[in-house]
Image: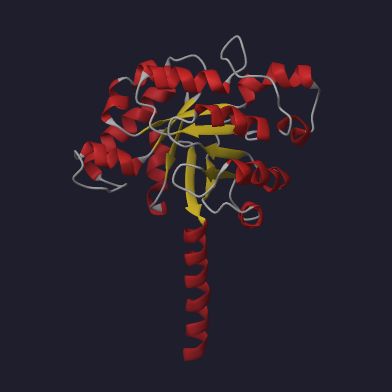
Length: 257
């Protein structure tokens, strides 16, 4: 089932977050219990070549692959889709121009200006013909505009109304920096939670999806209750640390026994 179909059905989708630009590492991550994998080109180490190669093991695992592009690199949004990604997350969408440029890169005409050429994506998808690909791509591939600043919140409804924008993705760390005027970075800052909830509510009112990055897994249920369906988490470093801690704890307990 596609990411769009899962979200349309009301499912909560948990995505791993990959920053290591290595397809073998992504293959291992995709084999775990996550529902999807996101390749991070903004703060992670992924680049054009690693995205091209890393989409494959995610698709082979039967899971959606998402890509977060660098700030302003809307050209890479089209590239990621041509490689086979099902969704693209664009950071720092702070203006209507940003939203429009992002949407244009994500959607074929008449909605956007995406150029034809799914050289890798179409054969990797392995279904239908070019006519079907063209007919279904605009609905199947999702554009997530990141909401991270006060400026973005101020024009959120206009961003959501931009043709070709399918969803928002809230970056809680940057959001907390903006909310405290640069004084703190705290992804679970209580004083910003009403605004975090309002972002999701406004997205749903506009008929759009909402996603969020989760640093503290224990409050995932709270985000879901707000209306967030896509929960991104679990970088390679986080997964390795949690796994190592669990393994070593069991070893030490056994040694003491």
